[in-house]
Image (cartoon, rainbow, N blue to C red):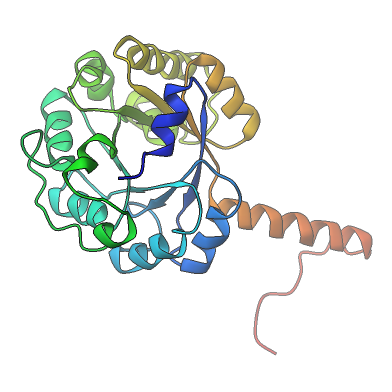
Length: 269
């Protein structure tokens, strides 16, 4: 069975860059995967897509060398196992708050005797040569810590056998720990949030697992790598599309004397 590229990078001491797909479209996914990311994640939790979209997206990205992953909607064995059977080589699981939940998540990821994953890798067996029980050693289980409970139980979560890493979503981490004092968002600058983000990286290092962070810019991602993060996601397809389109429109309006014009109302002719 093929080796997981992310595991190889981490073993060599190299950080990885992750792409993010929240638009349920195979062509958009194919474009993202062709840009040179080390991994690409399909966001089934908050993306405008479901499993019926995720499967053809995985097919469209097969030609790339990226490790393909999925963020599932919840700590649900059906979602997790079905995404793995579709060919995802890593699963990001939201809202893991304690050791018991982390152990449940890990158990859904692997075949017996190391877990309770049901055998039936319909697409994975076709798309990934040699796929079978050997997948136990290659799939990545990444738990999201997003709440005050998750932070309180950070050390025991990070020590869960079979957990490969912790993935930090800074928006939910802010909402879950700051009791409404701060708005959600990426690239946190507040000292209290930076302290939490660093604390998670330190717990991961102490337990020899990977620390992963969702970022808005390459500059912040580089800073996070300095804090000990092994994988950083930089923005995502919808934000990148909006940013590029917005920059193009702004430049055109400036060049053509319409930079103060709000534009048409979007109605049909």
